Image (cartoon, rainbow, N blue to C red):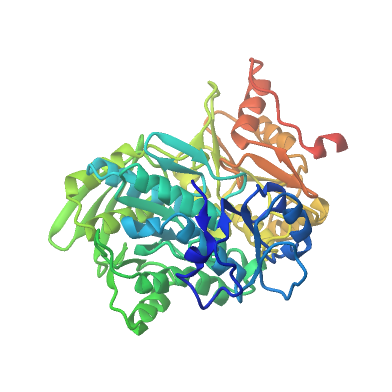
Amino acid sequence: MPPVNLQDLVSHFPQNFRNVQAGLQINGLAIDSRQVRPGDVFFALIGGNSDGHRFIPDAIQRGAAAVVGTQEVSNLEVPYLKVDDGRLALAQLSAAFYNFPAQELIVIGVTGTDGKTTTANLVYSILKSAGIQAGMISTVNAQIGDKVLDTGFHVTTPEAPDVQRYLSEMVAAGMSHVVLEATSHGLAQQRVAECGFDVAVVTNITHEHLDYHGSYEEYRSAKSRLFTDLAATPPKKIGNPRLAVLNKDDGSYEHLHALLNSLETKVNKIDYGLAADADVVGEGLEILPGGIGFTARMGDEKLKIQSPLVGAYNISNCLAAISTANGLGIKGQHIQQGIADMSGIPGRMEVIDLGQEFLAIVDFAHTPNALKRSLQAARQMTNGRVIAVFGSAGLRDKAKRRLMAEISAQLADLTVLTAEDPRIESLAEILEEMAVGARGQGGVEGKSFWRVPDRGEAIKFALHKTEPGDIVISCGKGHEQSMCFEEIEYPWDDRTAMRAALADLLGIDGPEMPYLPTQDDK
């Protein structure tokens, strides 16, 4: 992009920016001082473990043309803009820098604890089936036409400058719709502010991220921001459905329903679920050889749905997508085709087959509710035993450790507890907390559950426990491409690890097991 006048950009938000030098031209925006290029504006953000104000000198040395921060700072070589909310300022300036691309798009936001990525992909597939030019920004990747862009090692909504850049590229590519996955962190940290949501979809709100949000109520409040943002979206030339899509089966329904009724701006609502009084009802579940089937009832209309996705819980994700499409006026035949076309998502109940006599699956389930649903789905896929491999992340919600181990002790035949991004915490202590949960549900260490700290060895251990017809399911990492020990991200892919372990078991050629520092402790 050519240089732009900073004063022109901040003129859209005069209440938030002060001391802007007239005529200052900028080339870009940066939140990491190491990535500052000459002419960029550096945003000194304060996070959980760092204060960006400490890195202002480094940013200026690298050529920052201006700095935005929230603290009193003086005697800088470049203009300093003090704001009340650094992350909101970042989102606002990012939107202005890319010429407010959300105003040219129908923006469909999808939030929830579990099922966000699947639901976002289902909506995206339906839009494509209907011939709508659409893009998607998920925690897995960004899809802009034929271009697929990686959005990072660990799953969360991209930072505001990246979100706005993706939206801008979609507008340039002639797209009219975008599906945007909005995590609680993305909402709380204003990464999706100024995205102009026209449709807000929630899958569920269960136990997750309480380490960051502090309580379930605060976590729910962060998710709810998607719906208040929906009400605040100004009218657009392209249209403004202003549609909320709620899960009537979920505990969040009453809260979100009351929230919508309290808003000054009217918001249209569609709810979905298995409850007979939902606007869109799922009926007659069938577990098919290659997925699931059911009937979606929308008033007097009934749609026969077949999906290659496995697991009864995916009915809810399909219903969320169906409700969204129905609210946008998309015909039933396109809804059916779009769902049938969505074969799966990397690392979501992904089958790894090297010719073994049992099923090996990699899934992203990393919350108590998701693990429960994945293990229930695995149980429906076999008459054999279910063997679960998973961990619980360090510096994250500690209550999950016990809860997930309890669930596995109840639903899996065998459980292998292992590493999942321990970060700076003691892996041994994390595993002990999980073991307490397993024992509390009758688990017997060495008989029904084991602790194997190295994740590669844990997967191998689980495979060696199998008999023909069993299922081994490795949960928690899914498609992610790294695992964090201390402060180092080590390249890691559960799917590669599963293939390496299977090849080793079968005595055939396969990939090498990725390295983790726990291998040195063997």
